[in-house]
Image (cartoon, rainbow, N blue to C red; front, side, top):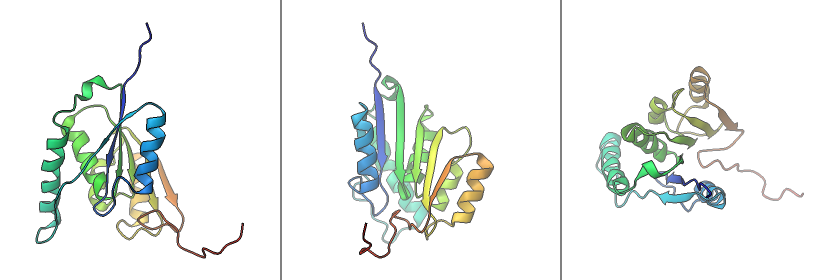
Length: 171
């Protein structure tokens, strides 16, 4: 009898970046082709207006906990959290809260994420652009070097990991 592994990819969008955006869409696609089930986290109607960043994050945490409370993570052999921007804070916090073995791919983390980017936290990679205005590249690079975390910096890319330039270049 064949032992079939069950694997799960969980996608955490950014504040203004949905799971349908290219970074998360293609991550989901890649792992679904490999047989992973997927779970798309949704922050519901959380609105930052009139709230501090901390209050906003706390509201999102409550929404996310309601979404995952019915998930039996123990049935999965591999759980991969792929997160973008604000979602990197939520993914790091949720992994700590659930206290289970999770792998991470952090895309364009923000400063509040650094507390979760630590050696021993099973982080596959951190990806950021050198022109990201939400987290200084030098701070991120120094942090990842100190924690011995693999960091991929994309030259001239901003927070969306897009590189703007001459779109009329001929190939």
